[in-house]
Image (cartoon, rainbow, N blue to C red; front, side):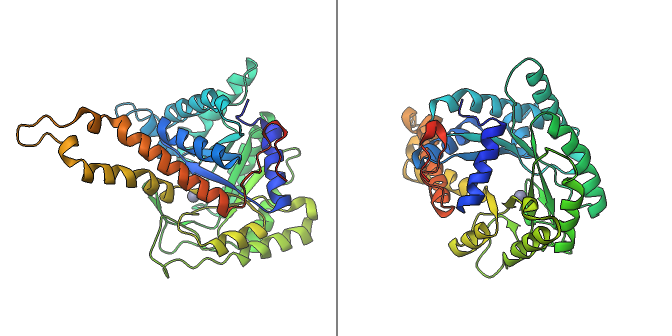
Length: 346
Ligand SMILES: [Zn+2]
């Protein structure tokens, strides 16, 4: 059953933190992109995380339906079915969901998992992000506490965010005045509120200058040492058990050094979207340019069926995206670390 169950997912996260590696969490919006992630992870012999955003879910449900939860369910069910064919574990996660979208995205997905559990089926998703970073911290954590109490009953993991990720993703743009660097005070408050919920587990996206998207060098100033300050403070206040499982948002375009440094401070999950989007599209662009007289019907000609069959270029896109996933695994030190069938590499 290579979609990880709760225990397996927890062990994945624990091993990553103990052995200083991290899982790529790749956004997907279709069967082909989900297959690309599975291919890349399997070829790297690494477990990993497939995630769906609100926009990705809406897209996957079809342009006349545009139901973000329904599309996310479709992708997750596809992954549950095909993951059995790969020798790795994959966890399913949903990305940024702002407070005003909870009713349309995360809550119906949690209800779906609750229904599945009631009839003896495994959870649909392993974890969901609630992004309350645009709210005052108290409101952010009030909602997070309510969610985490419900999640705990169904072995779901919650991801929350303090500080704001800059840039733009899924049409959501950070305010220019946004707080791009989280503070130790904020993260101490996270631990104080969320650690009261016994048996629950959460991931924390503590921002350190991260942005969504890729920008020319010099535009992004990451300061991973903020993560170390947050960890030191929380361990001092609440003990080693309170050390955070951290998430690195906006991993696309980051340098090897920045990635390694953040892993050393407890990052166990790094989100990648923009770089894998580009990797997917690049061979399609190449195909269209080199076979323009095959994909187009020019001057009364008929084009070439083989050239315009979408499978021709989508298969190239799948392979190229899988290669980018493999590169992410290498940068995150995850090669050969799968726990599937005791193939533990370390
Ligand atoms: Zn993000």
